[in-house]
Image (cartoon, rainbow, N blue to C red; front, top):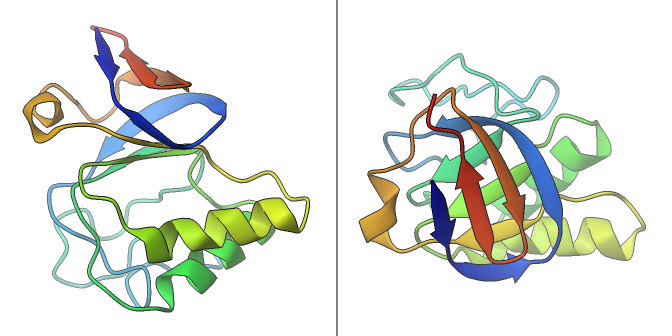
Length: 137
């Protein structure tokens, strides 16, 4: 299956999809030392975002989310790529700063809500340019 979207940060990545069922707060909701979701009431609490193609329906605001993403990148615990339904410029700023520092940062793609229901946690996915290719099994 292929979904096309708006390329927010260029690049290519692949890995297992982690499709979040609810918005996530990076500030206080993700442990930058481990990449685990720590937001107590989040449906995926305890799961790690490190190395995944992280599909976020939305984020719960804080201007500190960019610094948490930057810490994840610096520590090698960031998602391999970000797939967003709603653009969060503050979160993406962390990846932009990482790239300015010469660090490998995850690419990001925004897809329409209509394609969101086709994403399944655990499936292998590859993001390249403006498209996300998801294995059917």
